[in-house]
Amino acid sequence: MVTQMAFENPKIKEIIDYTRKIWALNHASGLMGWDMEVNMPPQGARERSIAMGEISMMEHSFVTNDKFVKMVEAAKSEENLNKYEQGLLRVLSREIKQALAIPREIVGELSRVTGEATMAWREAREKNDYEKFRPYLDKIIELERKIADYLGYEKHPYDALADLYEEGMTVHDYDEFFGKIEGELKDILTKIMNSGWPKEHPLEKEKYDKDALHRVNLEIVKLLGYPLDERGRLDISAHPFTIGLGIGDVRITTRYEGIDFKKSLLAVVHEFGHSLYELQIDPQLSTTPLAHGVSSGIHESQSRFWENMVGRNMRFVERIYSILRENLSFLASYSPEEVYRYFNTVKPSLIRVDADEVTYNMHILVRYSIEKMMIAGEIKTSEIPEIWNEKMEEYLGVRPKSYSEGVLQDIHWSGGSIGYFPTYSLGTVLAVQIGEHARRDIGNFEDVITGGDLSVIREYLRNKVHRYGSVYAPKDLLRRSFGEEIEPEYFLKYLKQKYLS
Ligand code: MG
Image 1 (cartoon, helix red, strand yellow):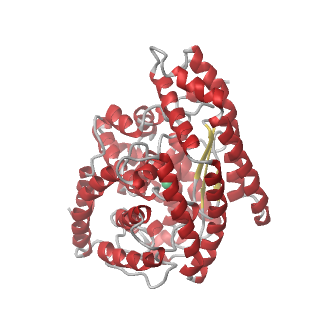
Image 2: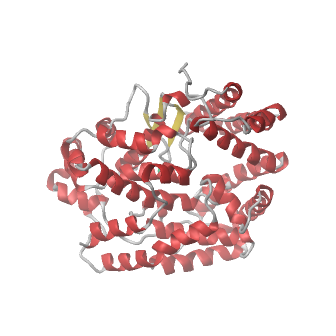
Image 3: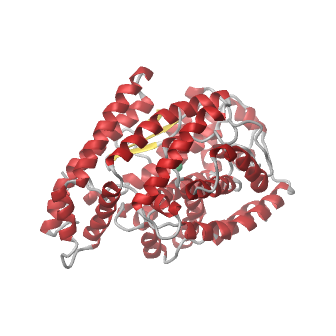
């Protein structure tokens, strides 16, 4: 066991000992979740869900335990707590508040409804049948509205849900954030569309050998500095993801569709970014409630940093070109410049997960504006597909011809994750902001990507973001490490520089 020097106060140490039980349950259900996506035979799903549901109820009772709640409450009046200790109390107070606010029946009902809804959503998407999913969506919205009321909010019920994924963010903050990018982003997109920038590329149609691309992906994660085999694994799953089981075991996955290789490769670079955050947390925080990235938005900023600032960078493409050529024979007739253009095509499209870095936030704007109305009770679920289509037309100039490539494309609502989408935009924008700081502070950033030691970049992110785990709330972390709030101007400047100059 790592010596946890970070925690000195005896009352805090007692709390840490108690929370290790909660950590262990989390560790178990994390591993079970990973196994479910990577290894488990499909017929195991029902029993696995029951087991994971039981574990989450055990966690709930540990978190709401009377003695524990009092221990945390009492520790707040201790004097001279250090930053780790204060961070611990902040994180635990939030967890306790959330667990106590929402009645167990509601938690149970949400878990049951979302389990069924996810299955219904899969079928509905496959059959292009919105009506099949709609009754579940009605129920989920009703439950989420109740949850918002239980959690409490000052101005907008969506505030309560947004805070679950991004501590401290409100509708006011998000409206301001999106307000800053919306207009100019439309303008930038129009200009790119009217320039000669590639909208599509012949490499999108190239079929690849899955084993060959897997070899490429393994080479690339090693090049990036992922401690494969020592502290990580790269597996295959339906949707790419990262799971941090502990600081010494952070696993990533990708998928192989057999065509358009950048999807799989950039997913690996993206997940590497998530994994590095968890791998570089201060080892003193191991097995404590602080040993995870602090929020969805900050986490996504780390994955987007590696995907967009590094992976889609011309210098990086040049660096990995020989690995690509060696394994993917169809690349023989494409130069590094062509691969770069392929990695960076820009075109308004229907599907969020396939969107480029220019149009991506438009997809989020569509979802954010609809979610706000849902939670405020301003729209009926029967109206959502049409609103979706209108907003797609308004923001992206494209209109879905089916529910499957429109309102039914994403899994989030079926899982009850309302309030999550805007964190993707925060991450995309923050990645650029952090990238600009890295450029300034490191000095020879582009040279490091071209042929230098990438540990310079890894160490930069460790010092500025990763090592703190959840010690500082997202807004505090940004102020402390970069002296700024989130500032979308960096993102807009970057797009103009990259695509329009
Ligand atoms: Mg991600």
